[in-house]
Amino acid sequence: MFIQLDFETDIPIYEQLKDEIIIGIAKKELKPGDRLPSVRALASDIGINLHTVNKAYQQLKQEGFVLIHRQRGVVINPDGAPKADEQYKQKLKMSLRPTIADSLCRGIDKESYFTIVEAIYEELLEGGKSNE
Amino acid sequence: MSSDYILISIVFLSLGFLAFIPFVTRKTESFGVSIPADYYYRTDLKKMRKNYATIVLLLLVIVSLVLVLIGINFNTKTLYISYIVGLFVYLSGGFLVYLPFHRKMKIIKAHENWLESKQQTVVIDTSFREEKLVVSFAWFIIPFLVICGTFFITFYLYNNIPEQIPMHTDMGGKITYTDKSIGSLLIMPALQLVMLGLFMFINYMMSVSKQQVSAENPDLSKRQIVLFRRRWSIFMLISGTLTIMLLLFIQSTFIYPELIQYEDIVIFTIIGFILIGTFVLSVITGQGGSRIKVQKNMNNNVIDRDEDEYWKLGQFYFNKNDPAIFIEKRFGVGWTNNWARPLSWILLLSILAVALLPLLLLFI
Image (cartoon, rainbow over all chains, first blue to last red; front, side, top):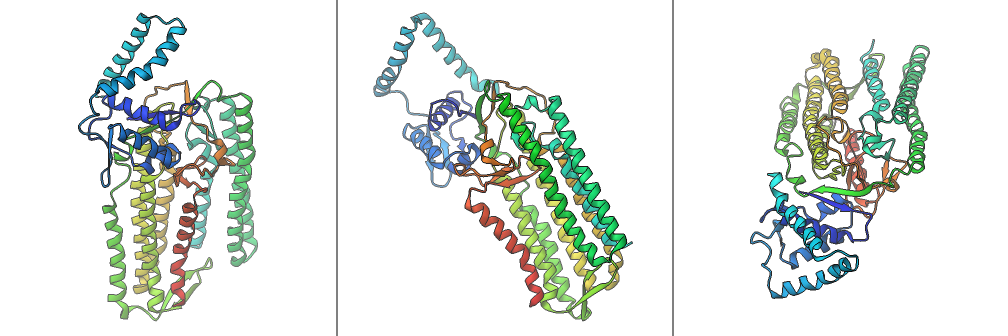
């Protein structure tokens, strides 16, 4: 899978990296059990500090997207990410609230908001299939 | 005509390759400055490449003419020194010719604001290292067996070897001899081992060096890079094995002096093959596979992250934030080092040290 990082936005690189990997998993471009490059290899290929990559991998591990083995390196969690529970839904609400508020202030009504959300869902569900 | 003349002529002809470097770089680079790929074919950039090639070839012709004149008028010793001086003048002259082109590119880029409308992006493939990038190390058993053969014939036939072994033939055809000793007979096998180590190291380097997929066209670029590395790896295995076989042949001439009559033809064939092969492979593959044609599907909104500030004079990479040690050359074919990494210097010095090691055997 190709990971694309933008070096001109304010979004930190480790966050972009993390998001790209989660998107890859959602799109099924990264499948359960797939291996990810080692910290050193990925940092060299991108041309960034080892800590940046390490930070992204550690957070992905904490959230259950990847496993970090001593010998096999970093692999996509073979059992898939943990299923959403109440706690997760609570967190999701919290993070959506400000963005929905932002959209509301800018005059995006419920319907157009849902259209955007639907389009993103479609794109992610489509994603992996075009590559097979 | 002595064989050395032909050899030196071949070497100088192959040096003409320096003039064609701007034509084999990646399309995202021009004289050590990164550019949007679609600007590579602009008329002013095309003209710069042509001008550079013309000046460098002219320099080569002048240096060669001066050397020929020295060859006619002076003795061979002066000529030898002149060749080394000529080589130095040509290579540093070539670099001096490059500099104003590099500076001009930088000015054009800044002046026309090439970066403004593009999003600077880095694209990498997470499964890149799962591709078959280089030949398996198992193949290096072949040159290793050749080295074992060299050891074997040397010491199995030790008593048959004449007391004097020829070390060097000068331009006049005069041969200098060295006394036979274990040390002097170990020079060739030691050289072979050093070369084997070096070739295996380069093979490893090709597999771990920074992937450098282009943001404008990741799919195409990845395929080009994979082919680029595979082809050079195969070529290096073949030419490395041939070089090690060449040293076996030279060692055999110590044991069977009558073989010396075939020495020239063997040397020219092998060195000729390697030089022509390098030239052909560079031209058809290009740096990073840039000359391998695969269909185009460009994204014109993005551009590779601009790293010009880390490329001193457009040729020397110093980026202390980049953990990569090996990276593709910007102006040339092959790889260079991230000189901000101490490991790069350690590697350079150890290669120099190991390369000089066989000479020590002469004093044993």
